[in-house]
View (cartoon, rainbow, N blue to C red):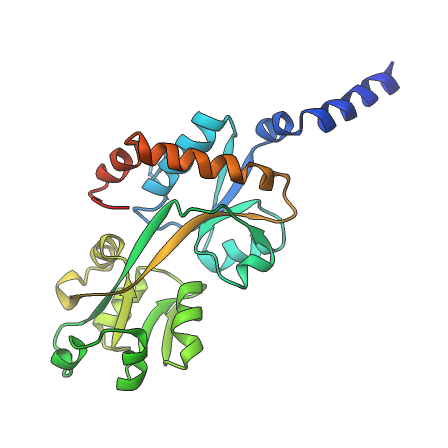
Length: 256
């Protein structure tokens, strides 16, 4: 009888793998970075990436999601090693060596140029139009460890960079003049400045350099890679039926 039940179990796994995965749950590694994702004092999750993923996977696709918080650099290390299934980030050539993703971004994050109040070259900084201008003008950029976009678009050009392990400390460093610029998403930047207590010491230049396409990236050894096409259809449905607009609007974000 034991042998028969074992055989039946194997058949169920082979015939209904999606059901087994949904029961086990997809584990996402994430950094505490409001308003993308965070955990409240009462233990509940919040953030618009959290809400988008929960709506798409938990509610619409029936896939249970488990969230594991850690510093961003470690998130990438854990997913690369296959200890966690997924992360939400920007696809890069390096990440694509160990992850698969879907076709359409779940969110486009506009990257804007910031500097510190009283910068002696403020008028010149306001003339910047591209990342290559930053290099040509000889400015340095403050960022956080594990920022793949920064590695690909800033460090790769040889632009001097200063790193911190915590995202909100970017603004403390910039306010203290430990770098000329920071390149970030305005909504998240404002919250980071407030957390660091330096909002009045930072200037938003309003100069948009690029947009970062955020995707759900799943380790290529995870059985959950098979849900990616369905996930892509689901987030497009959410955009069409107004769900995305509603989620983002609750966080004061008017475009995606």
